[in-house]
Amino acid sequence: LTSGRVFPLSCIHTSASLEKFGKWEKKNRIVYPPQLPGEPRRPAEIYHCRREIKYSKDKMWYLAKLIKGMSIDQALAQLEFSDKKGAKVIKEVLLEAQEMAVRKHNVEFKSNLHIAESLTGRGHYTKQIRYHGKGMFGIMKLSRCHYFVKLVEGPPPPPEPPKTGFDQAKEYVQQLRNRTITHSL
Amino acid sequence: VESILRPARAAPTCLVVPMRTKRRFSVPNWNAEESIKGREKRLRASMMVSPEEHMERTFYLACTADIFDPYVPPEGDARLTSLSKDGLKQKMEKLRQTAASRLALRKVKNHDPNFSTKTFPEKAQEIFTEAHNSLANFNKQKLHSLVTERCYSEMVRGNRYKTIRWSFIESLEPPRVVHVRCHSMVNEDNLYGQVTVRMHTRQTLAIYDRFGRLMYGGEQVPKDVLEYVVFERHLVNVYGTWRMHGKIVPAWAPPKDPIIK
Image (cartoon, rainbow over the protein chains, first blue to last red):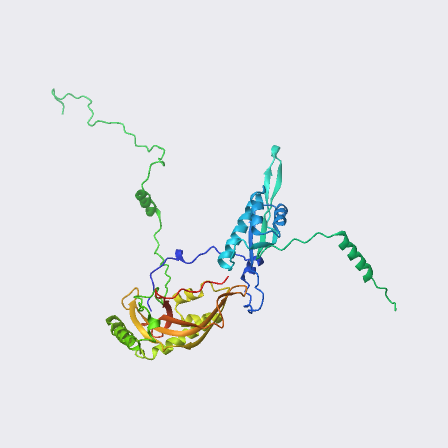
């Protein structure tokens, strides 16, 4: 048995590993069983997120709601010309997710993706002192948020048609018909 | 004694010159440019000397990093078999007789007397099939015992979230040893033996990606495969075993099928 050269402790493997994997990151790890040849092709789903973005979650929600349901090209276009600070961050996240999809998750066309879900979550809040005049101070709250996105392969689903008056009337009539009289024949 | 030439006058015997002896305070010059050597000297003078603790971390080389002196398979190897068997047999014998292979074979037999070029190919094929089966089942412990570390990383790369289905149907030709080499790492005594085995077999391979979609090959599509598989063993180690080390892809090999997306 021959041993190798003398190595100082400094070059022992030290990697700055991401300490905690949240549930959203773990969703990328599920492996489905192979499909039988007769089944329709399962669309690919890619989960991506970014944690601790220095932005308010309520303000970020407006952008997330804007993107939900769009195709990825349309979403990127809308974010590029939006004036909000969070738009830049979400655009980076979407581009990262797109690249991940093509490289690792066997997606053929990078434009063939649409955004199925886009959510915001609350990050860690810290407090800071904001100095006013005359020795007065206020406590400032630094809010952070997380942003989650789920890309699904395929064209975006068609938008639901708005509910017409006729549909509402039909529902009302159906509700009336569903009523039962208890303890009757 | 007093005299005319020497009057008694008060004459000092020695000159008294006033000198300052009291130590005066002066501002130390900390801005003086200190050379690296000067600084080191100063620090070394004030530092405590302790015996150096040797941070040793030994590691053990169980396999070599690459295939040494790779075997160059002759062109048209697979196509000539059915036509000119005699020609190939002659070539086979020529290769066996190459000096380097023979030397290496002798060295291998020194360390492992049970080794023979006639029985080894069958064992090699068994190791090959078992290794691929355990890759399909993701049986890591068994795979590590059948395959060297270098080959393991090549086999497993990118496969963590994929399902692989592999099956060995039959062997079209009996496998045979084609090339033997011995090499040493670090020291001259640390010998690793590498044996190339030529295998012509029929296999099926199907790889499914993360979502269960077929990515490569087909489960019912058998393919004829001509491979040159390299097996390696750490000869000096008494408990060493022959393990799969890699494959040699000849330059004239047919191109692979594209990945289905």
